[in-house]
Length: 114
Length: 111
Image: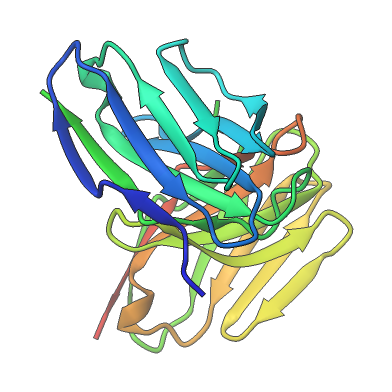
């Protein structure tokens, strides 16, 4: 079966712009989580969605937002981009909510802010 | 904040040798997982060990968990060049759903 698909793979944006990243989970998976990976901070949890509702949120500013659609696909949006937002953004899907066991990650979107 | 901290940060070995990575964490957990990441790509789930388990095996992987010391180790036996990657431990956060990752161990296996 198809894995977790993230688009686009690479993105270059200018400071102050906004960006939207997309994640299509494995068919049948209803939980989608987002993580940011940077050399300095490592992997950090952004948020998790289940059944179109945000169930958990990490410690990121309000410029980072997300949503989940009825088909479980998820998008995350970053507004007013800063240089420090340059990172690999990873999406993970899981069939259930409430335990993080069994996460499948996508290949990520590498965002560069110039 | 980081929950898991891996040790060493980097490890270089020859093919056929064993590689051991350690992970320490700060708060009580429900389970601990190990993931592999090849060259800045996505994470691949390797193995999960629950808090009531002490050891788990999967192929060439052996994971141990010591909840009294809040530590885990990942042993890769008979390493291959294809094992070259970064390895991360991840624990479930206090909220019970989000994974909290350590900074990882970069393993280099040369032939």
